[in-house]
Amino acid sequence: MALTPQNNQAFLREVDEELRRDQMASFGKRWGLWIALAVVLLLAGFGSWIWWKHHRTEQQAAQGVLLQQAMDDIGASRVNAAGAPLAELANSDSDGFRASAKFVQADVLLRKQDLKGAAAKFAEVANDASMPGEFRDLALVRQTAAEYDTLKPQAVVDRLRGLATKQSPWFGSAGEMVAIAYLRMNRRDLAGKMFGEIAATDSVPESIRQRAVQMASGLGVDAAAPQATATPTSEEKNAG
Image 1 (spheres, rainbow, N blue to C red):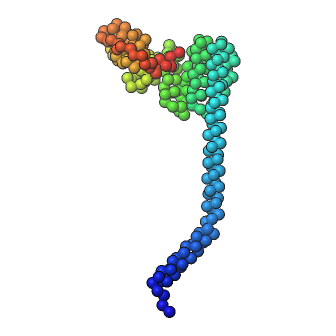
Image 2 (image 1 turned 60 degrees about the vertical axis):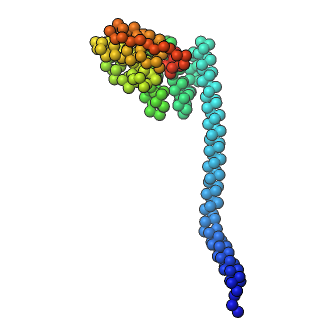
Image 3 (image 1 turned 180 degrees about the vertical axis):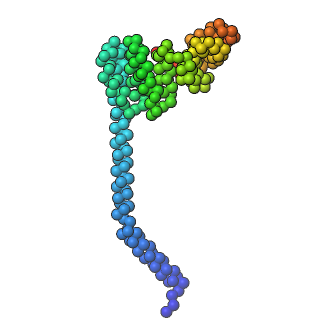
């Protein structure tokens, strides 16, 4: 007895559904264990990530408290008490806390007139390739300032040339040291040009611009500092 078109379609649907069930059963037998294992690993990885993020947050909070404690001790003239927390933070895996601790350690040495020790501490940050460039640049400027009197003029120029440009946030400090190095090399032309550029750059702290105006004028360069703005510059924020 021949099937009607309706019966034929129903038969084909049943065959198709049976084939799909067989395929799913075969897929489950073949890959089910691996899929379950992948889900378990995914959940385990996600759980580990949540734990690590929570642990990291707690760790950074604890380091923040430690840094504040050290700063409070220094502010209260308990410099020796600040030594231990600063030493711990100086080995932190956080770039910010590690750099901050070493900057503070260097400043403590500067207060003690230990210029060599301070320069070495700044050099640790400047030479740390894992640190962000902003930290390293600031450390290089401060390292150079700490050991300036022991450096040859050409060494100062070579070290700070990349930071003694208008594009650098440390142009004021780096440019001033380079200009003075030029004077020590009897290159009054280069010194006058550098002082003139510093005086004309409004991103440079006002105190440095005013000195640059006076130095440029003494070297025969007509320079006038622009009007000061109320917004602090990078160097003013990091002063002291």
